[in-house]
Image (cartoon, rainbow, N blue to C red; front, top):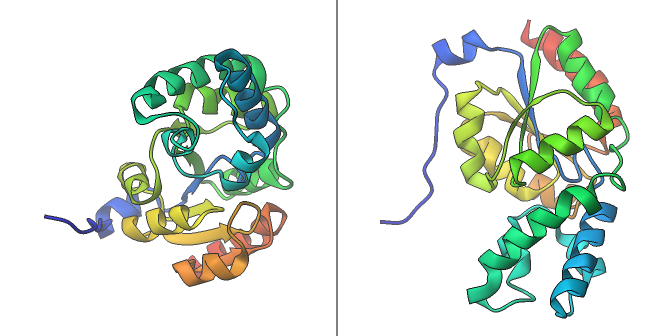
Length: 219
């Protein structure tokens, strides 16, 4: 039987953690394009298989296996995923900066008495390395994409989820969280609105002011 499961946060759960804000990672909190490109280039060098790394980093968001399937036969995708993740810490972390306003966005949540959690399709240990490198502290749940992100959003009582991809919008809406989209990734503002984002920001530099107004209205 097909279809999308819709999750609902009940009143008692949402009241327990009213200021929990979720963030996506790639192209939301960090500009992972330079690091991911370096890993793809290294993967290509080690395997002898051509990978257009410049193209690959224009479509970040979906799970790694979906991108690897463009370059490797299906029976090799799992193996190449393991190799990619093994190469990742050495090649991807150092070149990857925080997105403009990322640290300030997380700080705004904490200043309001809330907590920040990162829910990402990325392998969680590598996501944690990125956050440590850019000096952002947050709990992390990895390997969740699009509607599946609702699992973690509900578990943490997330009331606002911030992401850059239409998959992030779908995850927020499936969980019953407010979808705040930033037009810093592969999806432009029009795509994000069409997907159902409740709020679309240019980037995270606009988040603290929006969040202050949102918190005041909610109070």
